[in-house]
Length: 153
Image (cartoon, rainbow, N blue to C red; front, top):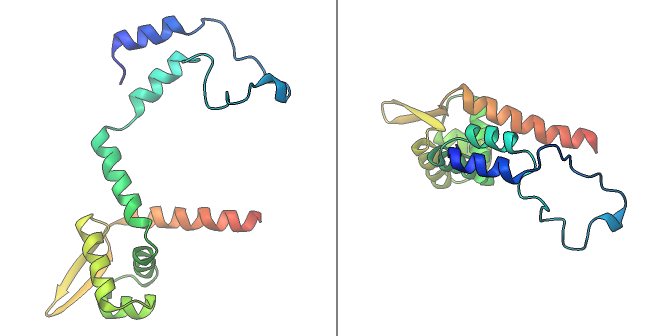
């Protein structure tokens, strides 16, 4: 959230009633000006609302870590295998994904440390499953998003 002084400064710097001018034609935007704003803050109220709504830095870091885990194709295959197969042992996950048991074990260790999967032990066997419905929903949404792009093509 922005401090009160910064919010007041932003509000004072922004024109009170000026609306952004419409862009007409290529000549209206000077070369190289596409990445810079003529006015630093156009809508101070919106900036304040968005700044207040942003999660804490620690939450953003944890979120980036989860998305980083999902960015590896090998780990993603393991997660999708668990999404489709439910609870599975390392051997079955490896056979489903076409990876070595060692690679799957390593992926599962990272996923478990980040609370993406959970383990249940039965004697000497370990069975893995997705940790909770949030992981399942995130994957379902991502798969739907990718499928949506394929439908449009």
